[in-house]
Image 1 (spheres, rainbow, N blue to C red):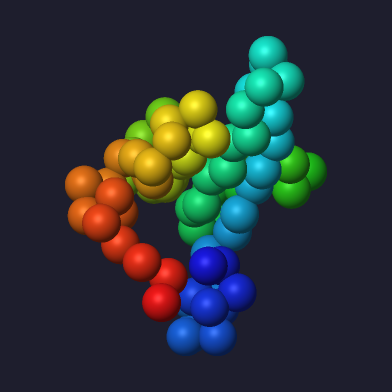
Image 2 (cartoon, helix red, strand yellow):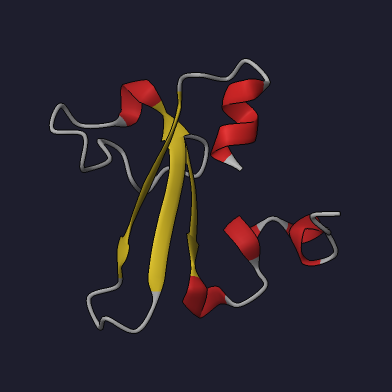
Length: 75
């Protein structure tokens, strides 16, 4: 997804991933380059949905909590 956004001209989009503290679920966040800490490993503002699209595999098919994402297809 981020690769496709970069190809479309959105080169300042960034992706961060990791595991939930339980180790059971995978998490990812998509944000703009200015919202990434200097170490490149953390978000500066993690809780603002206007700045960060976040997903955890624990959410199932509720991708980024976007209502239309449940019906979306990659095809």
